[in-house]
Image 1 (cartoon, rainbow, N blue to C red):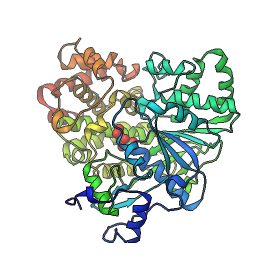
Image 2 (cartoon, rainbow, N blue to C red):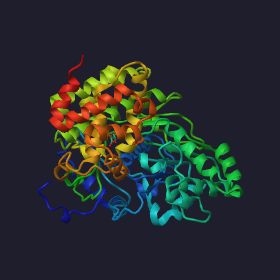
Image 3 (cartoon, helix red, strand yellow):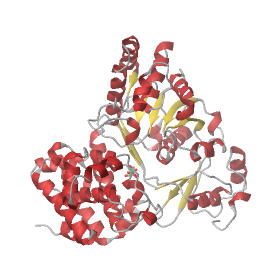
Image 4 (cartoon, rainbow, N blue to C red):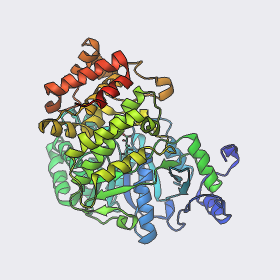
Amino acid sequence: MSGVDRSVLPRLSRASLARSTAAGARKDWGSAPYPAPQSQAGLDLAPGIVHLGLGNFHRAHQAVYTADALRHTDGPWGITGVATTPGTRPRPVIEGMAEQDGLYTVLTLHRGGAVAASVPGVHHQGLVADGQGADVVAAIGAATTRIVSLTVTEKGYTFGADGRLDLDDPLVRADLVGGATPRTAIGLIARGLQQRQRAGSPPVTLLSCDNLMGNGHRLRSLLDEFIAALPAAEREDLQAYADGRVSTPNGMVDRIAPATTDEHRALAARAFGVRDTVPVPAEPYKLWVMQDDFRAGRPAWEQAGAVFTEDVAPYELMKLRLLNGAHSLLAYLGLLRGHRSIDRAVDDELLSQVVEFAMREEIMPTVPEPVGMSGADYIGELLDRFANPALGHRTAQVGSDGSLKIPVRWAGTLTEALAAGRVPRVLALGFAAYVRVITADDAYDERSLGTVHDGARARLTELASRASGPDGKARLLLAEGGLLPQEAAGHGDFADTVAEFARILDAHGAEAALRAAATRD
Ligand code: CS2
């Protein structure tokens, strides 16, 4: 259907979806798609969840788990989806979903080319934090809200270099002023909880679904720091409510869900014979492991395959260090090798051999195996997942926001490996590659490979300009860039290795650097 003019198709809606399903519009479709169960689609669901961050990850992960859970057990689990990126206009997702009765298609893209399409249909309302902040606060404050979940990415937590709430951030400061309409995630949550406290509302669970170690604990600390910065008159009551009636379970989330392209819109049209402007592509694999600490109930997510356990840390460590850690290596080294997508980076034999070595020899020794999982098998599975060409996952997308991702993905591995007397050479090369990508305009072909966005780019480029030579710049960013902890930044052998790779990258290119990393003594 990619050749078909999609503008003549009816727009995705509850009515058009029902018609297309009845007419068997999916006859030739490889795998079995399922339509939204009509009794649960969108607006009919009683609201119970407010979700901050309406990106592709949430729409392919939590929303799908929730839709699957609702096919087994009913519940008031309609999701109010909140777009949280400040100032972004237009807002294709929120506007597209609003024009489609809150619906969108999830396209599960298999490696061999098969596609399964489904419509979760669990969003019952959409809001934009920047402009409708008061409505978001009211939604969080509503007695019917039992869970406030988040996928606001690392930067949405507004922490500073020390990991604590950034009280110098003008948005955070504005949110601390009484009577103001909050714009940050922490501000929205704190003000919503304040409404609950004042109304004597039931308990609530705050559920972080972001790639942060101990994400529930992190969220809780940031919330406590926000409350501590409020005027005394507000502080005590809110702290008492937060202490007595709010839980923040930790969780590990996993599903690769790249950015939407026109190809995906064409696939969605083929699936249901309707026009969906905001479908979500995703890999077949998905995993969600979390603590079962929900103060006001939760959907039966275990029916959809979610795992509940008290000890989430081993799953988090394994996922963040191996999957996300390797993803970032593939992104920066892939960009320097001219690869546009992660699958092409994995298809590059030299690069993939070096990254696999890092996974097995540098990262894995720092990762305890969760019960019932084998690290070696997990690595094999990851390389397979990364190699899925149907995803077209852009290296520039994975490489974006490295200044916030690197501390989560590489720092722990580095600190522990160095303490054990090992210098992880591939991670050193990865760091040198990041420095090169983020500071040099011509380090990779931005026009064909895409822009790597990073809020720290200006600061890091300015810092690098104070040093001379690629090795000097890499050393300075390592020492003062605030990306890696002192144990790594101040480690002489590691700094020398980073500097050496920066020099090789500059003088001889990425292939030579990869060969040097692959030559081990
Ligand atoms: C990726 C993640 O963009 C990135 O930084 O590493 O979004 C990754 O795809 C997910 O964490 C997979 O669960």
